[in-house]
Structures are given as C-alpha cells and as structure tokens.
Image (cartoon, rainbow, N blue to C red; front, top):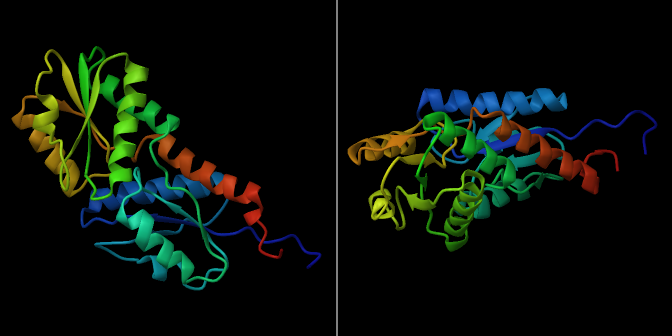
Length: 233
C-alpha cells in the first residue's frame, strides 16, 4: 500500500436523460451541489436520450462510485446502470436516490408551497413496467400522507394504471398533483397539462430541492463507509 494519502473514489451521477435543456440544467445542478459538498469533481451521465452516456462519463475513471439519480427502481436502475457499472473495473453502484424519508419531506414542501391547506394529493410519476418500481411510488404516497395528514393517492403518466384521472375519482376539495419527477421535460409537461385539464394545481419537479443533492451525498458516503472509499486498498 502506498504511504501517500489515498485518492478518493470519483462520484458519478447517472440520470435518465432528457432533450429538455431546462431539465438537463436541473440535473447538472444536483450533481454539482453534491460534488461540491463532497469536494469532488462533478460527473453526470445519462442512460437514455442524450450525452454523455454512462460509458462516456466513466471513461478513464478508476473505481467510481455511481449514484443513480432516479426516484424509483425501474428498468434503467435494474438493467442499464448495472450493465454500465459492470463494464468499468472497480466501479460500484449505490442504491438510487429513491423515495425515502428525505424525499417525502421534499414532496411535502412542494405540496405546501402549492397549497398550504390541501384536502388530498395525487402523487404522480412517469410509470414503469416493473411491479417493484410502481410499488415504490405507492409507498412514497403513504409516506407523504403521513406527513400531510391528508389522503394521498398515486398515479402514473404512462405504462401502468392508475391514471391521474382515475386517481382523482371520488376526491373533492383542494386537490394537489404532486410531481414524482426530478426535472422539467416531457413527463413534467404532460403532468402539468393533465392536471390543468382536471382543474387541479400541480407542483414542479423535485430536482431543485436541496434534499435530492443531500441524498446523493448520503449514498456516496454510505458506500465509502462500507469500505469503498479508498482506491489503494
């Protein structure tokens, strides 16, 4: 082992990707905020739609720690990212950002900013063909309901029911559509237009909330604490 101080493992954030410039800016800001907190160089790659790809982002890096910037564990988290990580010597992937307590708190903040006294909420995500990913959104709705003290139903914009309209059935009063999305783009635009057609107020995406970058930092530090932080061991 070298007597010099070990170099810290690089942080790589992998997101879905979007052709929306504002969406890419939000994802870049999350990555920069997390990297700055850790004192590392920001490195962001995408698994779909745009560049740099995961392979391009990790090219030339030694044993990076990869944090999937996803709120649910769909196809990209379960297939694309593990394949990309496996192709890089020494690389490891953490759990995705997910929808745990910190994200539930961020969702609460978004809802209350939209309406300080909601009667109900429809937590709406992009959708997934994976049962487990859909279940994660349902669990996120439960966490949000606990924080707000009002009913929270979940809905999806594609791939699987319930739709937002179906979730709205039977609800009344001040209903807010909470975006279970990270950045502006196709799905956020669809969420907003669908909510407007139902006469409902919608929140913005979550990516700009400080909690998202904080979870990226926590994922990296957990990997380091597990013994993945030293590149000379």
